[in-house]
Image (cartoon, rainbow, N blue to C red):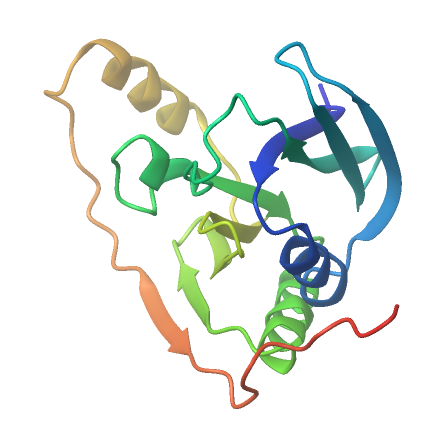
Amino acid sequence: MPYHHLALATRDMPAIHRFYSKAMGFDLVKVERGATPEGGFAKHFFFDTGAGEMMAFWELHVDALPQDFETGLSKAVGLPQWVNHVAFAAESVDDLMKRKQRLLDCGYDVLEIDHNWCRSIYVEDPNGTLVEFCVTTAEFDAADAELAKQAVLSDDIELREAKADVQFHRTTVKPPVHLGQD
């Protein structure tokens, strides 16, 4: 089942707008402004990510809330950055490579990993959250499903050691591209 939107808080909406519009290629399509239960107000921005799903960000204007809250999903809960992340679907390996080049051209370094069943590119958004584009490159079979079910209740499962191909791509564009007046 598709999701409608994923909502996160930010302290820097201009940077989020720059990143998700220019580097990720998503359209900012809607904003709502309303009162919050704690007093003050919030703006809720929605980016169309494709296929009817959206990524949303809260810009909070609430004096009762801490102004220096952590926005990185993993850092906020004390975990390494790679744990909690947002993964968007790429249509194909060619689409993935175009998205990688777009990110590099916009001034962002990109980590690329071929996991041997999917291929991914990773970049850090302005909130400090790891964002991924991923394309599935292999079919799952009954053995994959059975191993996954066994792993739910046991750590004593057969490990399939697969060598991932990892590449780090540094941008030559610094600093990241700015919106200007768009």
